[in-house]
Length: 109
Length: 118
Image 1 (cartoon, helix red, strand yellow):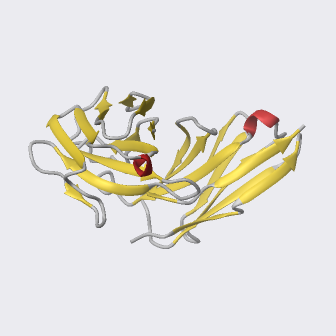
Image 2: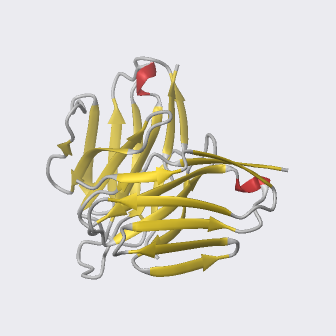
């Protein structure tokens, strides 16, 4: 079974800072998700990656399949980015997702 | 892309009542759906695998008589929390993938349902 580790667990940043959240997994995968969860809210999918890099607005996600590692970057962070960011992996469309514990991000104005 | 919906998004109920949560695949058929649960400050964990037309498969430690799963059609799976107690308060999420898509590398998941049992 895959084990997913995220770091850091908690992160506080000043508005405008560049933020990196890391995710490592133990077994080869077919896809990795980055998710965002606001307090008391539902889950929003930010990215799904199989290789390389994706960018959406101020968010960038990268994955290194050989190293079993992915990073989520937030440029020019803003207080509205404050949320829990969760990494999840799977090895096919027919097997369940394995989730990391999440990284709680607080961006202070 | 494929879309999965959940209803309701939030529910508050009294202890002892039953609550039904729906998971729908909106633009594809899913023979298999997965249900997950998240406790405070913990990661989402698989509860059960829902199979269309057959019994669900539950993970160790999940009571099948308490968490009833019905996957009666290829686009709908329901999770019923029976005789809910405050300790059942949690965030529940489902996921699914198109079964006949050979390129399906992963699943798509609903936004989740937050259950609060008073």
